[in-house]
Amino acid sequence: TLGMGVWTVAPLLVVITLRTFCGDGWKNAGYALNVRGNGWLYALSIAVYPATTFVVILLGTQVGAMHVAALNMSAVLMLIASQFAIQCAKNFFEESLWRGYLTNQLLKLTMSDWKLYLIAGLVWWAWHLPYWLIMLSTKEVESIVPAGRIVLVVAAILVFFCWNVMFTEIFRVTRSIWPLVLAHALEDAVTLPLLIDGTITLDPRWALVFSTNTGLLPAVILLSVGLGIRRWRIKNQAKANGYH
Image (cartoon, rainbow, N blue to C red; front, side):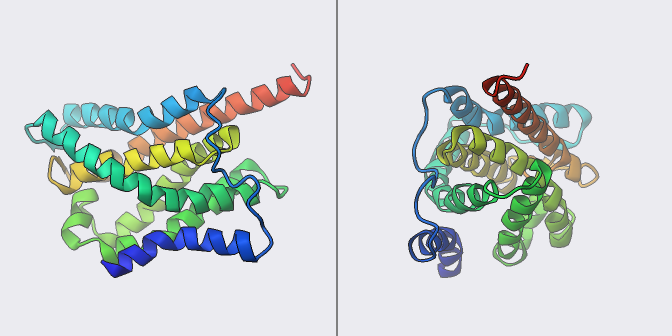
């Protein structure tokens, strides 16, 4: 719809306005690929959401938390591929603002990592409120977390904080939005369509744990990945500064 189009494009328009007309400039905007020395983070960005989703589905089916319909793998892969192309464009808009601008500006301030994660995560979460509260149909909401819109919105606060640790750390190391565009596009292409199209059906009693999109289990896995990158970054910074 027109409203969804405006909502999607708005982040990039904000970036253009702030950087062009408000004195922030385009230095360190995150548009350089910076692949050299960061190839492992590009590979991680591509693999992390599909791998996490696979683990969650594996565990969820074992404990009876979800039912997975008979899979036509070629159809599933075509669905993911078609969504991935669309989501790369959409997430270029998002990542230009959340990491390329917001996180980049917050890194210039003196604050703890945890405060940075929290502020950027909450702003990122708040931008999604119209999507959850208005744009998603009731059927789509129930397929993601069969407990209603308000539960979905509240659960997403924790989820976005966990995700943001990983997104922030990848950006801090690579200084590029592109691995995050890839990760974000695969998250949108893998975790949501499998729920919305009915391939995965959640047991309501387990939904807040095993939802591939808004569940506690995938959030904890992704938080662990982010904290692992943070540990690696701090260790390498210490070495670069001559500390052992």
